Amino acid sequence: MEEFREIPFFKQAKIQAQFLVPLIRGFQDEVGEEQTNRIVGKVMDDYWRKFGQDYGVSHEGNPVEKMVGLLSFFSAGDAHEFEMVKLTSDALEMNVTRCPYAEFYKELGASQLGFLLVCHLDFAVAEGLSPKLELVRTQTIMEGASHCDFRYRLQENRTRSD
Image 1 (cartoon, one colour):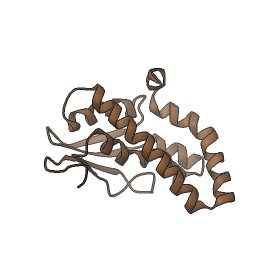
Image 2 (spheres, one colour):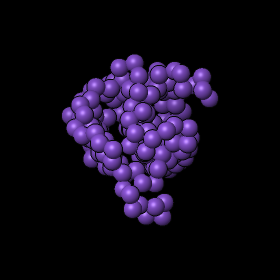
Image 3 (cartoon, rainbow, N blue to C red):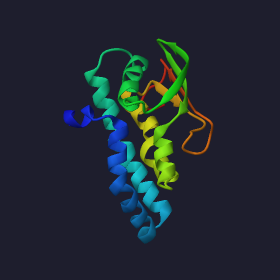
Image 4 (tube, rainbow, N blue to C red):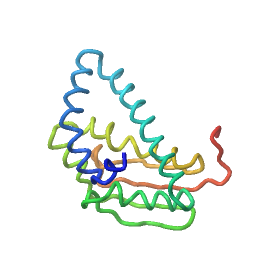
């Protein structure tokens, strides 16, 4: 698994898309788009929540500091251009202004699948890092917006049941 993390995530996403996009489209044709997307979303959520948990256990710092550390994994190889809006011990707010993931999936004619396979994971990773880490994101480039607005906030009073 460690070798997997040595490959920039953007490169991984491009390799995976070669077989995942046709596979998912095939299932959408046979089973239906809604059911396929629900199943893929659940599988992706479970995988990325566990990724967040594992990262959280193996790295020092509070959940916001850990999320800052993950930026280098998801943005390696110039995968994002972003502007930092706010960075404190309890908040990470940034706008992604350029997203090669969105550009790549748009070229494939698969922006909806790009959202499902790439953008969707942000919430599961945050949840896995800590139940006290809240992510609010109202728009993404993948969905056609001018930028992605990430707002991570540490909620000291939140628990897993909240």
